[in-house]
Length: 168
Image (cartoon, rainbow, N blue to C red; front, side, top):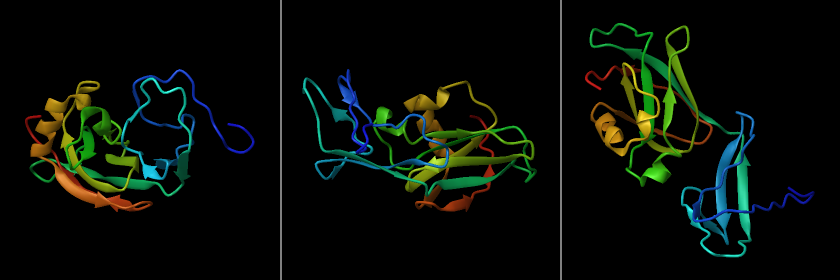
């Protein structure tokens, strides 16, 4: 970035999303616009363009948080589980990946997810999960069966207790 907050990215090819590496956990991208159009969650096809200008990246420190506990079928609190949060509306896999969050419990059995973009989500609690399995569109469909839907707004903190979904 230069002193006027302008930036330059080189070597980008194909479809790209904008990210800001190195942001502290108390900040996230609020929006990315190109010529006034919101492209935050839409891949920009840079193709063979020599340059793209008029991109505006807006950051926010109003971070949405979801936290809670997971219980089993008997209503007992669980201390070992995985929570997967994904967008309520199915999206193209590359787009959905930007929204999916995975959480595990802390030593008190409580999970917390930070940095959700405002919108509707599905949360599913499962016993365990292989690394990166949440990236599979087929597994995402399976997770929807036992999911709990919720909506979150910018900067909101929400308590969301979940029941363990058996068989996943």
